[in-house]
Image (cartoon, rainbow, N blue to C red; front, top):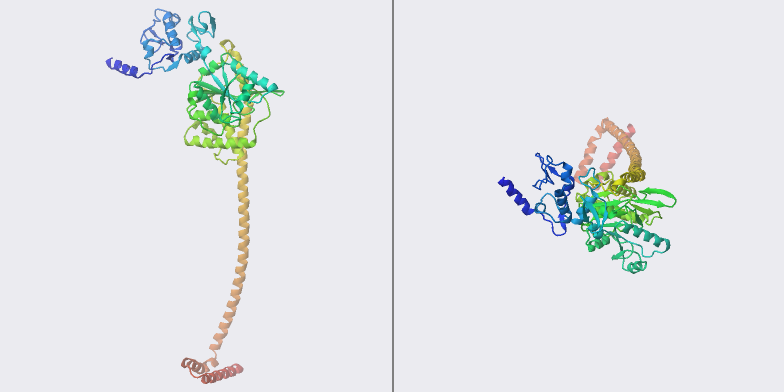
Length: 540
């Protein structure tokens, strides 16, 4: 027992204790009390003190009794007793985050206690009611959830009116809109009188994502969002609060629902994402000088970059933002340029051994800065499908409890909207694979044709050289025949009687040549030899 107490003291000495404005990140007294074998009920396994006994008092009465209520009130106000201050099993969070987390989990099946969605209480102002106690909802009053965008500075007429509606939808959802614009754009934007704040970018035009990240960090906020300027947020009650409560080291993003031009609403026409919400702590250092808000590929690169920083990714599974259809504002040259930067980033991340689950979806795609358009298209399809399939480990409810059926219908509608896009994506992937295979076959056929041509040329050259060799061999054979005939004739001469009779004369001539006698003697002998030979030939 002494050793156990000593170990507990060591744990307590190293625990991270809440500071003013903070509390324990603990929902145990609401959802998972601890019942010992003797019937004693503790709010958690660390508490070390019984708050009643189920053998004496019914469980629900204990859980809704004054002692449990008081403990829950302490957690919500930060006025913790010592055992909670010293607790090593739960982390530290802000009062605001704990309250948002409690509200976001109020739809769990069979919660231990009731939690109202919001009431008006004269003494406390806006409040939620927990166990009969009103807790002032400070988060609803003071929580700042900035939503960054870049509004075009030269709007007028209908376009300006639509932009006002979009901004109003952001504010109605609980976001604080902030536009990031270049030096010469800021004064133009202020003239429009839009209900937004402005942060400077380094240059005019569509801002770099790195500039937006820098603006977010200057604000010092805990969570933030980025959205394309023409995307209207669908109104859900307390949307910003619910999203903020889910962003513990996470990133949520949404596809837009395209509307207008006499067509049915669709999800996934652009195969991308137009709104991101994230814990600012996962941003890390982003110094990229290529990707810009509103251009191609940034909406793949940005969440994957955050994932390499350790963020959890989640695609929002209900329709969240509306976008009016308009002609594309990008061209093929921009698409290919950003695609090659994306391919280079994937290569870099692969070397760092991050995003291993993602890379399994790219096994069939060769990574190269010189990949052709078909390969880049296959990479883009793989990015979109993988990001779309991500989910955070906990569900987010966007509608109140009594509208759960409607939310389920919305989710089904979203999946219905997106299934056709998913099938189209799979078709595009298979088409890319088939195109790559056809390209390989065509290249192999060209190589085979070239090899066949080289083989034919070699055969022709060989035939020519063979004919020349045959002619040479025929000529050599003819010479050999002539030599054989001459040899035969010489042999016959040497075997004749006349050849033997003229032997002494031939010897004389040889001696004359060897002795180097006078020319006259040599000439005389030669003439005598010629006569003898002539006489011999005449007689034969």
